[in-house]
Amino acid sequence: MARVELERVNKIYRGRGIEVHAVRDLSLTVEDGEFVAILGPSGCGKTSTLRMIVGLEDITSGEIRFDGERVNERGPEARNVAMAFETYALYPTFTVFENLAFPLEVRGLERARIEREVREIARLLEIENILDQKPGQLSGGQQQRVSLGRALVRDPAVFILDEVMSHIDAHLKFRMLFELKRLHQRIGRTMIYVTHDQIEALALADRVAVMSNAELQQFGDRDALYNRPANRFVADFIGEPATNFFTARIRREGEELLLPVEGTELVFRPDAERRKALERFSGNEVVVGIRPQNLTIEPVAESERIEAQVDIFEYLGEMAILALRSGSELFRALASPRQRMEPGTRLSLHYRREDVMLFDPASGVFLA
Ligand SMILES: Nc1ncnc2c1ncn2[C@@H]1O[C@H](COP(=O)(O)OP(=O)(O)OP(=O)(O)O)[C@@H](O)[C@H]1O
Ligand SMILES: [Mg+2]
Image 1 (cartoon, rainbow, N blue to C red):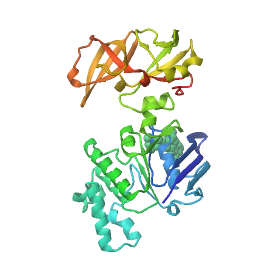
Image 2 (cartoon, protein in one colour):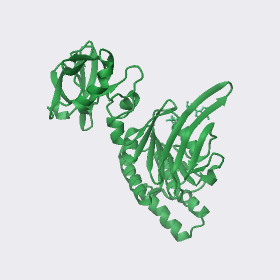
Image 3 (tube, helix red, strand yellow):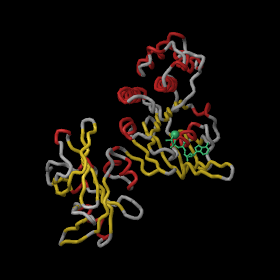
Image 4 (tube, protein in one colour):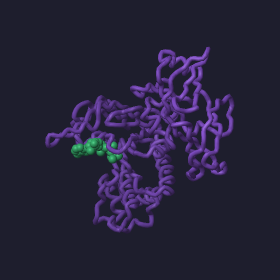
């Protein structure tokens, strides 16, 4: 069992006169048995964070606690953490079976049980057919599955997984995400899963910690990240295609506040709750965010309308992306591929007032 707490953790790499502040004042609590993903673009400090939790990297300042006990000074062996990294070295002279069996042998399990557990994890990761091969004979994706398997056969307090599916093709990845989620539900262990892929993060985790530039931006569940993003970065990073942003100057019209976007025909209307948040900005600029999913071609209940022109119609699997233009602004909406539209077509798009997100233009902070 383990609850993992990070309190104002910093990591600064120093060398030859250069300093890299890789993790800045990170505070985060992962509850016992929780599945948390750390999500963010390349270089934002995800791996550094994990390496400090595992004990492979010194903490420059701050404290890490397992079940309330400080572990800063404990080595990896003393932390009871199982980890799999994107490029975790497998024992090259061992077969896949032996690689998977090794952590169980170290624990002194009897032969029949080792056999059973290795087969079980191999079935889960679809590597039963390569159990007799050596790592050198495997593809990148296969090696990655073996290294994930070697972490999963252990019985630690915490699992730490870093980009463990980056070389696995999309089709298999979907099945593995599902299996990993099921495994977590069955064993109920604390899991921390690092990825730069929001689909993986949102599919697996109870809560997602979004990082950028060495700092935590938001820690929340899917609903919070989608509907109440802490700032513009999160609104942009979460969701595919990304949120549309416009700069609008707030205009009062009787009881209403209107958000006309300069250089376009677009005018957004916020709902009553958002109007309140805008009062103190009246006459100023504000950033309006609206997700492509929330701009529909068919009217929805109590929807508002904007007009635009089709720029490009692009297929994306089962959906199509409509690239739209209004004056100087380009933005996107989702459509069904059956709705095929020629460039230049003018159309109305509908949105609900509550789906209009507002951000401070200077700081990017979410207003409402
Ligand atoms: N050993 C090191 N020495 C110096 N700088 C390092 C070291 N390890 C990482 N860094 C730097 O720290 C920052 C964070 O790196 P980190 O590996 O934690 O990012 P990441 O989020 O895991 O990125 P990726 O998605 O590419 O794996 C980067 O600027 C990186 O160059
Ligand atoms: Mg990394």
